[in-house]
Image (cartoon, rainbow, N blue to C red):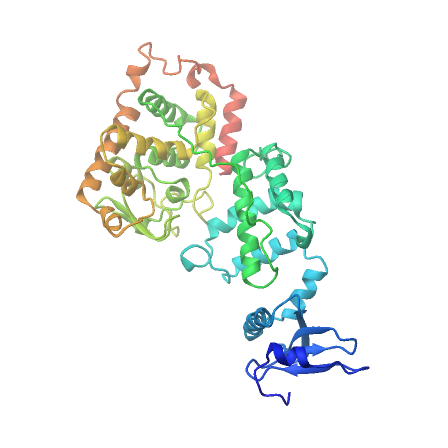
Length: 448
């Protein structure tokens, strides 16, 4: 590397090939970067370096004439940054040439994210809850449809076909022996899977595994926002069902369902609440939520549910699992069995959250107040402080009390005959379930 001047286009153009051997023109500013002139006249930009094992490597960046000098210089700087972090650009390029597959990149992403080495929203390590859903979409949808495909050969049409196949149910499968639901596909699952794949490719591109993101520009199905909410009559039906299911369902699951209706909390927030977070002053100080750490106001009816839960020695959770090793995770199943009996096929835990917000709107509260009540991400300086505003506290108390009255006090008005299930769902205690059915549900609840 005797040449100490900055490499220029004129130097490259004027360099004549030497038959039988290669000539190297090295840049005097960017160490290791240069141009290789073959005996046949071919000129290519190269980067010479030592990797983490101190092995000498030489990497071809691109052909002169196809790649400009400045483009090659910029690429060399990026690769030198990778080398400084202990990566080997030559190995990465070789993996790409050998047909790095979608499945291999997904494996890399899941491993790196699990170790906390990838940053997600707000430049923070990817959350465990996000990684859980990403892993589920990879294993359920992405890997079966595209896992073996080389990324270098992937085009937008392939990814959009994956989306169409997921929506059509090609990756659908029945419920397994665990607690998970059946996989049915649909446009929502398809769109979210494409979003996950795009994000995985973006991380891989940022770390030099791939040169471009094959999912850039993909057309996703539009978001299908859920608008289902329970009417006042349906809230009363839910209250009666909660009381009647006390004989056959897990009490912790029933308590969580009631808390969801009274608070507007997300399912994972309610199930994972710790006792030390709950204040007698009427709020829960969550260490982490979908929107980050935050204080969520709850009304006295919801606080009563939280305080009524028995303490399991050694467990920090309000709703501990039966084994005491973690928190209860089967409230969604409890709600599902109640809804199935009531004939509700489109009601989920999120429906109860939406019902809470809709009730607030019905009572005349503003969108900003409702957003604060539900713990939505604060988008402005003003909205960051409204979460603790007295108006929000008052609104939460009023909505929680209104729903509590419907759950407990107005159920009889829905069905004057005394049978709350007379509108199409037979009474549970009047023979809606057989003895074998009761045993089955008890076993399912005990397994939670």
